[in-house]
Length: 377
Image 1: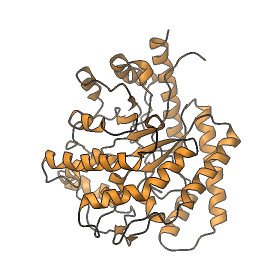
Image 2 (image 1 turned 90 degrees about the horizontal axis):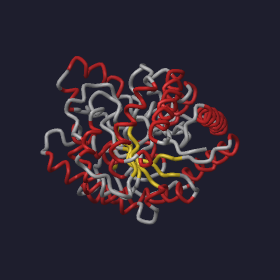
Image 3 (image 1 turned 60 degrees about the horizontal axis):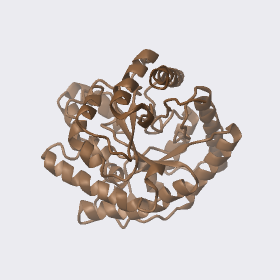
């Protein structure tokens, strides 16, 4: 096979209704048949991997199918968390449109967000090892050659799981870094690409720092990046990628921090791959910043060229155009075509019909092929 632009996605894929129900029962304290649950998860992962391969997705994953959510799943693995935070979440862009917010927050308030009330430590290291065994077994069954596995960054855990124990944010986020190191290293030791989810570096501005200055937000983001680099100090940079996110909800997003204001800080993070939102209407124009900002030699861009929050199936030519905007500025060999965010960030929270998701993935591959024919002649 000649050179071509690779394709991937951001992580979460839709869970079946039964799997989502069992996950919700588990976090509610109800007992479930663990063997039955694990068998359902394995079947679903094999199906998800097979579909990704069938559609030509190059760098695939397990869809986060066994997890309650991309960030709050860690409360099963770490000590220090209790209860569920029922306080009202204020999101700057939604607060500007109260009638719309009432509709959106009704869905978001169902997200399980425990609170940090004591020391955070890794107490169930076997859970990530079990996930990795399952991925290997499923991967062997379908013959995958390359895969990634997601993990919550210290900063995003701190963003969603409120600290009521540590004296400072810095103490909290570095404790999380220590606690999560085992998970990060286990993923890489198993031979997979580690994707660190980092919405705190973008979404954090219009959530926790909505009433603060941009300088305060950037100082906090810098601490989060220091904690992330500390946690992955033993992992090669080219075995990692990081996902920036402004919030996987269909809202106005007019308060989002601009990519140009955070990109130089993001470059200081150790992972070589950078997943950015490049398809949704608020951020689709930001490829232009790379006319002025130089991508460091050790970095690769993974722009989202598919929007996971709309049922429109992007035309392959539009996908190719979006890829081309980046490829012409940083080089096609340093671009991987991705998706803005996950399709189902939390169990039961899929926003898009599953058949349409696969149609979008097919369009992703077709668009990457069109772009490849232009840049790799």
